[in-house]
Image (cartoon, rainbow, N blue to C red; front, side, top):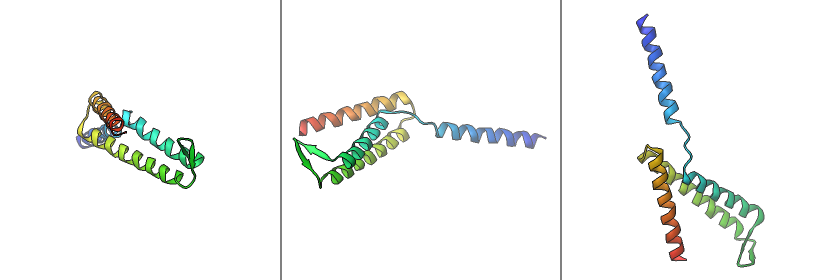
Length: 109
């Protein structure tokens, strides 16, 4: 009888660890990834206009670039999740990362 109880307790521990490890947390980089995916699909469907000039042959290339951005941002999100366990810290670090990237983009522009 005790062996059955120990097996039940062990299965509960496994189930709890799976539930905590598989928990989906919404983070700022999730929104950025979704944004880049939407922009990539939009550029493939409707094409790209830069300064009023339509680039018929470049729309696929620009779509692939946005898809690459989405993959890189998703990878960064996974890295931040592995290093930080608390949701509050993840949000602070990821918002800081987005802010820093935006500032660098505006300075280079």
